[in-house]
Length: 100
Image 1 (cartoon, rainbow, N blue to C red):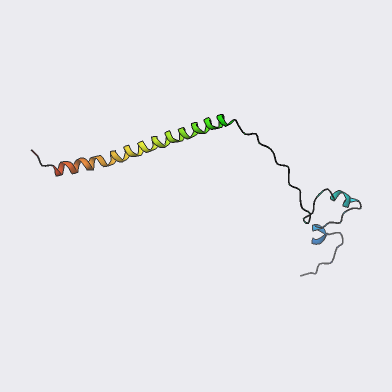
Image 2 (image 1 turned 60 degrees about the horizontal axis):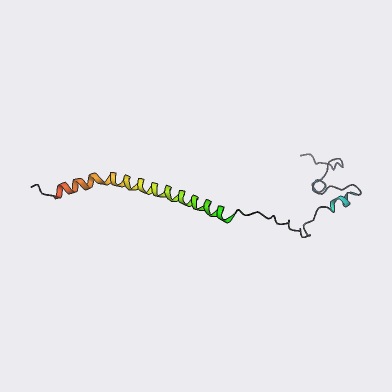
């Protein structure tokens, strides 16, 4: 395998990772913090809260809607279970009850 000669026109890995800066470029980098500097936290945004009466009414409506859906689901499950078990119950009662 042929050995590779050093070519100054091809940058090395170090030169690619840390390119030399042109003169005066150091001043422009002062605007960006380095890892050793502590960044200042961004100012907190104040989020306006809705009127408590509106918030309460909306929450109540959402909870009522959820309860109605849960109740409808429960009734549907009870009806499905009764439909599935009723024939077995009727057969057992007819078998256990004596005629006359």
